[in-house]
Length: 270
Length: 270
Image 1: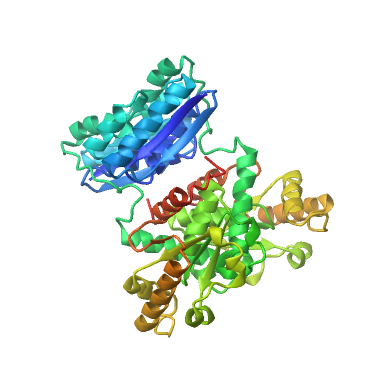
Image 2: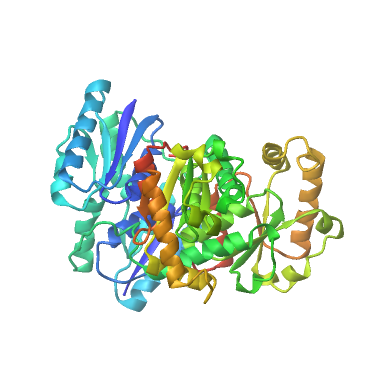
């Protein structure tokens, strides 16, 4: 098995995203190591030794995906016996030429805390998502960017948190539960903010599986109950013309991006 | 101002990370548009028209960062008048050569839902973080990977959620509040899991600012109270030899990655 190293003088999150995206196109397993905060020569030399050692032990040349701003540290890593892939520097030169501006590399820029306003937006959005999770209160819905609605465990909470953390968007979520089911009406707090409503739905079998992990062998996780709730709620979405998407085969990232695309809501963090 | 387009047949998250990382090295503002789920020729042609239109209006050649697997759709975008940067295909050929394996491009791989086990780990971790947020219960600490401790509003909750969503790690968090302050002892629930404890601290001025936004002009946001709590807790960290980091100048990403690095905890999602 090939070994992959993600090496950076920052968090290495960019190096990981870059490496994952490229390697996902290859039908092979990889052993992966992430080395963040490469900040001095001693650490760089130790990492180089680890990379070379992995080569000697496995007999396969390791892959290194790196985003290292400091030249000395980068040269230590690229002098290892691995194949090193450097996407930052590959693209900096042509972009310098296009823009007619020299790059000014500095560390910790991508996932650092350069922008305090972004930081506050993000923390405020996380607080908002938690304060308005699971319908605990409906008093702050006027401040929501989006209100996610759907049955319990269809993906509302992880989506709310992802939208808050990644994009600084204020997302409330409201579960339709027992008393809402039979009358099939929007509660007043939702009616007055109906332009913010976005529905999530899910396959009944998958819902049953998720609820079973949460509360085994209960009415809550009964297949018939799951089907009933979904039918009622899907009917409500259609009656009330609430846009909705099916979360069954989508990751939290995909659901979040689809919601942004459908609603046209602008993120507060780019 | 130059306009930047992030275009993908998936979420475009990879294209954004790629573009942000490269552009963060340039001291210029950019107007940014993200176009995810480029799935048919009509949409591709509309996006091409939008790109060309932006060129005509601004007089500046747009930048396009794209990750598009389908050749036909990619060719439509790259036939626009923008400068197009394609990091996937730039690196696929050399990696094919190194590995001796042909790439098998397919869409939706990077931020899709290929791996149901990863997906369940992630959702379980998010549920765990919420169930064990803010010390609401200490009964599930045996199942924690990490227990974050510190004063109220030092960054525990966003860090817990980020570690859960991105890495599938189970993080509980426990705030030291009034009754813990004066006796400076670890509560029994923490003592029995002390190897899992990780402390967060923060600058007193920054804490006061954050608390002021949360509950203005209260004892909670009083500068003297903030200083007192931090002093007591920092002393506890030292007395009990609890590893800790200062969150003041770090993003949630940096804090999370530093915790992984210091504790050596392996992520469940790569």
